[in-house]
Amino acid sequence: DAGVIQSPRHEVTEMGQEVTLRCKPISGHNSLFWYRQTMMRGLELLIYFNNNVPIDDSGMPEDRFSAKMPNASFSTLKIQPSEPRDSAVYFCASSFYEMPQHFGDGTRLSIL
Amino acid sequence: GIQVEQSPPDLILQEGANSTLRCNFSDSVNNLQWFHQNPWGQLINLFYIPSGTKQNGRLSATTVATERYSLLYISSSQTTDSGVYFCAVSTGGGNKLTFGTGTQLKVEL
Image: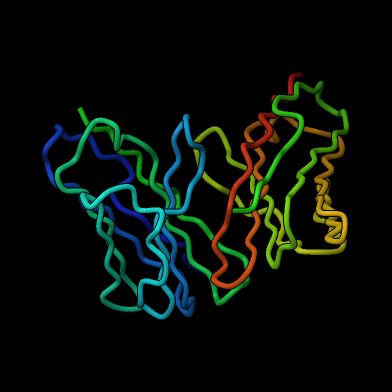
């Protein structure tokens, strides 16, 4: 079975550019989560969706960050404009209700 | 919010040794997961264990929910066990995971 699929795996861009990260959750899962991992803050939740609806975005650091889930099989996380401090590994995870979360391989983002 | 503390922060083992990693949490939980982050950065599910004991090969885990801690046991460690082990919990609704700071494990030959 396919796991959570994220793209791209690596992204290097210059500050000020728009960045779009993509996620395809596991088929049948109804909850989707975006996490960010940095050395300073560890792994932290940014936003999560239930049945394609954003439920809690309190972890989104600034208005420069936005996330959408137009359907059950796709989500995006956008940063516009990007800044060097946004450099991190971004993980997407999915679950069926409160069952175990399964993580994608992450997107390693570097903002120059 | 809930606090998650892991110990030890770092651990070096000789191949074949056993170890116990601990996760303490500050509130009742409805989800607890153990993950292994391998050297390539992938987060691998090890256990979903909000309570009780589970075993999977050389790994086992126990969560004592009433005392708010979980233990991960690694027996006969191998170099491929190296990486960071994370405990993550959720409390209340929504399955939002709060991660501990991890235990960095290195297994040497």
